Length: 327
Image (cartoon, rainbow, N blue to C red):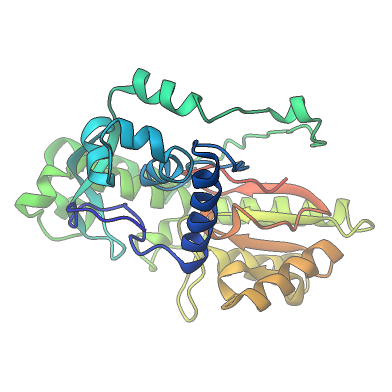
């Protein structure tokens, strides 16, 4: 846990922590008190800082309490005042509204922070420790825009120049939205590039859109590696599965079933797993080859999903904001 006066700053994570983490802190402090030094514990991680810069402060809190005390850093706020800088910017909320968010976005005094960090850190690459990993065979598919996409691209360019939202079929921009005009344009462009129906369900399906192309590729790998029961991961951070609503996941699944004859039982969405038991069951089924295609977002399917035993392909429908560790 940590205390902070920055209660309106987004992205700081759970300030309450957990009982498990508190127990670990007590154990480490006991060892450190016996030796009288910042020694006695080793942390091992493939993703040392994955979500928030508070994680870096907490590493120091666990492993360098005496040095923090020597520098008169006795809280997160004291650490942030020295090494972090916050700013306010426009972002999309979970309901797709534009909001102002204050976040710690930058490290400052980076040389000093890096030197402090290097005192407790060593790293090894996969080559150093001999991790056996397949070579990445990356294929970029250039899919020409459909006629509807080409028409919408022209409208998007006009909107970006004029700020007239009625061109896109939406109400005129408010004063706040106008300041974030390019953010709105970027959001529309991402949705358009994936599928026009993310912008308006009344747009038509197309044999050459990204969903159709992806379904063809999945079916091709499915047949090619059928004897090995090869499995595939499909990542998309837009158009994720929502029961009872049109979404890209369900659309590709429909095409796989209706156009290519792949059994529905062999296609799963990670969002369907409501608890750890059902999640583990799907991962086991993937490793056994009973589930052959799994869909998910980067956050839900990207880290800690050890279902790669039979993996033959990973498909990205949009550009992920963070890396994943499937294969």
